Length: 150
Image 1 (cartoon, one colour):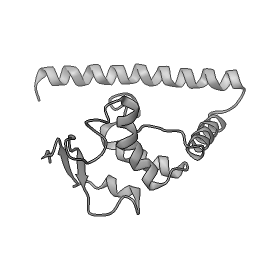
Image 2 (spheres, rainbow, N blue to C red; image 1 turned 30 degrees about the horizontal axis):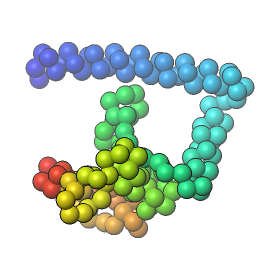
Image 3 (spheres, helix red, strand yellow; image 1 turned 120 degrees about the horizontal axis):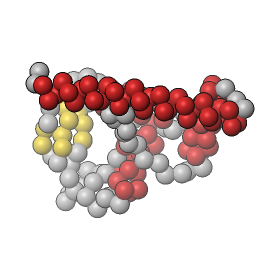
């Protein structure tokens, strides 16, 4: 491993520790302001997500990967969390593609598999419309702009 990479990893670790500390400080402040514990606060957040889904609010799936508690390899698990909080498999998958591209204003080129658009997609063993956890498959094929990446 090169010296630059080791240095970057050390910087990342330091930043993650600082950001984690700030996250818990902010959470503690919210708990104090609302005179509630973190379990109740988390339940209120989940309840808000459920209400938004039930009321047809468009939501995008994205990642804050690289920040504390947000690793790239955990992004597929977030689809499962959306389903556990009231979204259907279809709604969660739409949030990861079509709705995200619409909300970002790039739906003319991305978000659905159509002629003339960039083809970013996965090839999976199981159908994620039946079980959204299918996207968590470790050996999936990933295509970016129509070209297999791995």
